[in-house]
Amino acid sequence: MRAWLITLLLAVSASAFAASDYAREKKWAGEITPGIVVGDPVYLEQKNRHKFLGIYTEVNKAKMGLVVVHGIGIHPDWGIIGTLRQRLPDHGYTTLSIQMPILAVDAKPEAYVAHFPEAVERLQLAVAYLKSKGYKRVALVSHSMGSRMSHAYMTRNPPEVGAWASLSMPAAFGTGAAMTYEAIKAPVLDLYGANNLPQVLSGADKRKASLKGKAGSKQVVIPDTDHLFANHEDAMVQAVKDFLDSVK
Image 1 (tube, one colour):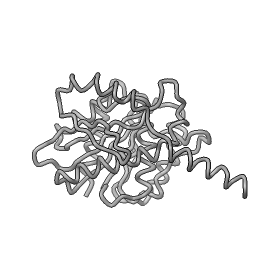
Image 2 (cartoon, helix red, strand yellow; image 1 turned 90 degrees about the vertical axis):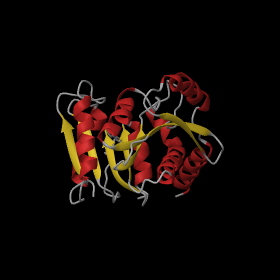
Image 3 (cartoon, rainbow, N blue to C red; image 1 turned 180 degrees about the horizontal axis):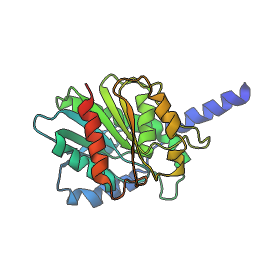
Image 4 (cartoon, rainbow, N blue to C red; image 1 turned 120 degrees about the horizontal axis):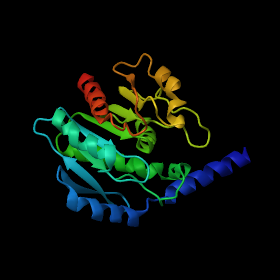
């Protein structure tokens, strides 16, 4: 019991003081904001007064506001995240793609776990921003590490979030246990490529089983593509769009 308590206290202590690599965030923001063509940069402020970047793309009479959540060590306009944040507005969805906590380039995935509390705070702030803009319906669209971070948020069942599109959800770090959706009340789309990473494919059956009986939830597999949905971005966007369109 004593060893368990010490481990718990160390974990709480680490999470209490863990923060993203703010210098690297600033560097990313300085590099990408001058080139933003679709959407506008906005900055959201955390309790510690750190301001992080978001890219807000507004649609007139939007169906819903979406928080777009990127994966490990990148930024809110990178690769498929840029594709999602720019193309979902074409289907009637306002997007807010936000900078999530990042570490050094060589940081291992498991090192990010201590930063999940900060990730949750950022998701809360992003949802609040969309609500302040008048969006009564809000959903998350996340990828990879962003899906792990979103899982930490969505297990709290925030009443403001009505749906979650979870792309390429990896297994739990260290244990390799599948991340599942039993505790989540909102409809979930579990989307992945058939040629995904082993840590995504290994948990697919359990993730699917955890969606059973959940109204509006489903698992979709896109054939002949990988973790990043390479060369199948159209199918990726269409799957997310179809899911969001189906949410009541």
